[in-house]
Structure formats: structure tokens, C-alpha cells
Amino acid sequence: MDAVTFYDLDRVAIVPMAFCFPGYDAGKADLPPPPVCAKTWHDRVGAALGPVRLTLLVGSHAHRWYLKPAARSVTETVADWRNFGPGIIPLPHPSWRNTGWLRQNPWFETDLIPVLRAAVKEALT
Image 1 (cartoon, one colour):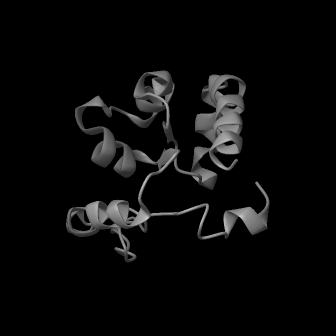
Image 2 (tube, rainbow, N blue to C red):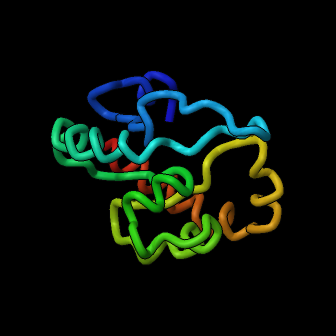
Image 3 (cartoon, rainbow, N blue to C red):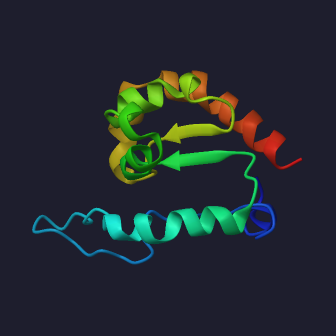
């Protein structure tokens, strides 16, 4: 999608798991989103958005919150993408750190990405 579409608030919503930056741990990695954020805001934001044609669950925290017990490791959850039904696609979190993950899981690019592109195109029409 182009930048104009991406930033069109009537067509695309990006809802973070936390509505703040939770800081860093001792190893300088991002801390996980505080659960109170999702508990407080996600139902409200969902209600305000109304019907959503496509939900991309990006990263393990989104997988665990929205898929509950169906969420396992990122690899297992994303590999199981076909079983979450139309309108929901779990994805790995985009990061320079997942370069190795992408190399180890070539099915992501060959199998899931074409379906993702088609789903995004359809949702935006």
C-alpha cells in the first residue's frame, strides 16, 4: 500500500498493545507492554473502530492477547495462520532482529506474504 493509504485514518488503524513506551530491561531490550494497557483500552478502541475487515496481529504480545490459548511461539502461531480464519493474520514483529527468523522460515515469504498482500488489497477496496 502506498503512504497516502497507510496514513488514511478512515482506512487503516494501528493499535499498539501498549499506549506508552514501557522502557528497557537490564539487557537494553524493550520491556513487554504492560497488560493494564490492553485491559484498559483494546475493547474501547475496537468499539470505536467499528467493523474491521482485516486484523494483522503483529508480534507475540498481540498473538497472546487476541488469540489466547491458540497463541504459541511466534513461529508456531504465524505458521498456523490459515487456522485463524478470514480477517485475522498473525505476523512476526518487524525488526532487524527477525532477519534470521525470515531466513529460517522461507514459507513466510512464499506462502503467507502473497495471501497477506491479497487480503490487504481486498480489505482496502
